[in-house]
Length: 369
Image (tube, rainbow, N blue to C red; front, top):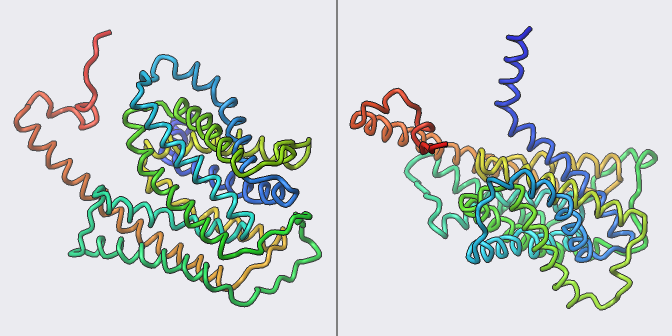
């Protein structure tokens, strides 16, 4: 029995990052419909982003303060500025653009375009010379083709709608439409969605660097929530002059704010930071298509959303391109492991005392108690 329990625990630890990202994608799926219902009810997207991050910051603060009290690095001025910029990219810009686009398009469209983040991240990393592109091997060609295919897919979704797919389950669907007219500016919403994906991609790259200098996921999440809320509030005050927009009742607006703050901006962002540190940003982005499938399924069969053939075609192309890119990226990991192994072997020959230790053990400095 003990052996079986140990085996189950080993399986859990091996697939823990996969399970956490699965939970994260389910959480994102519910977010699309809750926020759409709230926006249809009349809530301003920018006010929502502000309130959501205030709630998230308040929720995460006790955990960050007590659990990372002894491990949290000292916050210098330079590091604070870096976190401020990280918050601007991940919250101030990305979320405001993202939820504004949801008001003008549809959950299925936005969830599909989000899959291009991996391709955009790769393009930006190439431009910053953080990634290499070797066109002499199949992996390098796959990365290039995957990027181009993904961007082509989102272009199709933006410029081509096509005929509406017929739904045979109208009598069993839940309708979340309200009194506010939405989905009338498809091109405007598409531009906002793509812009949010670009800032989101930059955020992923910068996030990996910041975690190396500030390896405290809970504290970093809390800082981003509070700073992002302040940035969003400043932006909202400039464009929203109606005090009534800041008032919310005990209705869908309240519950969408609580869900977005506690579950998404709090727990899910923390899970993503943990998975990014453990497995890298590419691993995190590879689960995005699961959210697309879940959103499209619920939108079509449960909520009665109109699905266009152009969106289905474009989403399929985007997902194909994403996994082509990820297959190419796996080659980088194999090369890195092989190179690291060769370096370790050479180092062991010069240091016989280290031959019986693992690479991970050699990276950990000895600290006196």
